[in-house]
Length: 244
Image (tube, rainbow, N blue to C red):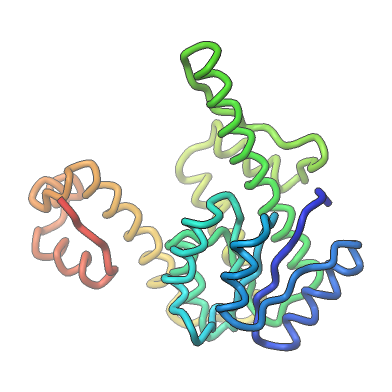
């Protein structure tokens, strides 16, 4: 694993112990935060590769916490740890800027997959930012980079996802994301899966259309092909900010 620090801010003892043991075995001792105040102090003092954060921090609502972390350390991928009963909240956290989530009970294999994905994302983000800066300074142009760091080789699943993102159809990309989502649910059934997935698709779609129309709901409803009153209702239900 790349040199650096990992932050674990998980209140539930068993999940925290599993995370700590995983990183200690990887010769990668983590920093531990048992409360929100300690978490913010550590974020201020150190630069972390990634952070595991509990969905339940009594001092903060997770949206407030994510917003604070994003402003302080934009490049640090945040992985939410939540019980299955809080899956909706975990998905909401991803919509608000968290990179990924783990559903309890967590296992070393789940952590490994999440870590590989998060470090890939961080490396790509940092490399893209560096390349954009270099191209702008030396050539007056910008170009995106989509390749891994040398010390973080891609897995088969990473290659599959990248290939689909670069050349696949929208349906294929959605299929891969849903495949990953359903895999995380594990064995057994989850009530309301259809509505849950539909909500996660509707929210970014409506947000993007509203951004394109600069908040004009009449134009947005025409583009979406839905009634204006229906659009208003969905904006309220999905808690979408619509600033003109």
